[in-house]
Length: 239
Image 1: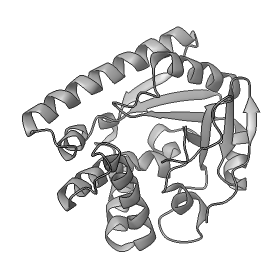
Image 2: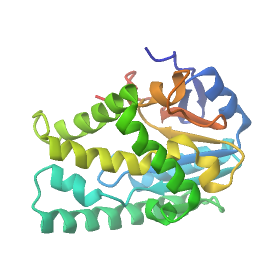
Image 3: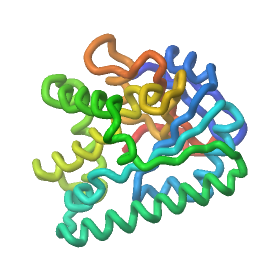
């Protein structure tokens, strides 16, 4: 059972730090991480502009990281042939990068950094955190089950509700594993004192990384918050 989300409303967005510890990190206002996934219609250029504008009002620094690893495998898991999956992935990554650049520029807030996930794979911090994720997938049952639920739910929504085959589920897990270092320890990756990773829904892995007393968990200075438009519907959880 996840902890009760704690609500904080600031201008046009409403933020729900996951736990009391997450609330304390959020209140420090040192860093906000906005993670953007290719093909996610939620992250329009306008939405990114709004998030950046809001984030810079409350946080000292803002970084935007977009996924560009294993995107082709995701499309392959959705039924695209390999060549078509590669083309579709390249197209979506390019479009995502353009939306981020336009959205950040339109916010009129200097100092917002943008990154591709692949920029970090050669760093010691990323390699260490990614190894921790892969190890947990092998031996940490609650972590594995939550990660599989994330991958399964994502794929079912794109397979007309059908359960993904084992190879497709494995592709989804690779994509998730590549992103998870930023949910574990953004301060180590970006050199900031503390960080709040935000997304517009609570993810199945949130209670695992931020709510349990043992196993693979987020670093003490890493927080998670659901951040959504203040007038959005009440349901904050992933379908």
